[in-house]
Image (cartoon, rainbow, N blue to C red; front, top):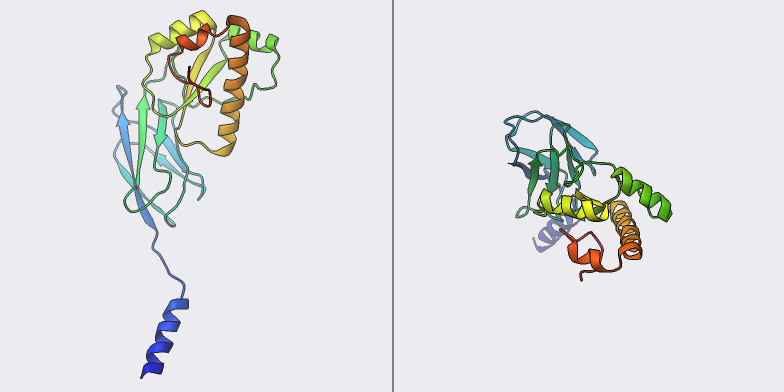
Length: 208
């Protein structure tokens, strides 16, 4: 009898553990004047994309607990997506914050392609500032007033781009290189005074 029990215990101990996956809930935080939305929700690790046509919360099933990257794209609004570092039974909410897109180029710009300007010359930086295409990168849901950003850009020629608070390695390096290059240029041109005028802390730079 003891032999049979031992065999059963050994058998179950080496059997693979099967899982039905883990469920995460996606919720919208709508700060716009829109009552409907059209966009695409993407999960990088599973390479899945879902067409979204409403502001209703919805659930997604993931293969297992762990790290995931989520993104919501929309032509109608600026979207910031936040979520836990690891999806677990206790931490499984993905929040999509929707904001009205700005058109004056002074406020935070969302979903814009980020160009690595670390190899730019000072002349190229100056040219980009004149065109309004040089921007610090900030990560996370930071409450920054458009007025304070406009004041900074009017004086120093640099705007801001807001990205997700969860940063992948490529975006991390791009943001660091971008912000360091702008910091070096502004310090060369204005000294240290510009740092006291920052409306938000650029990603990867030291606070004053």
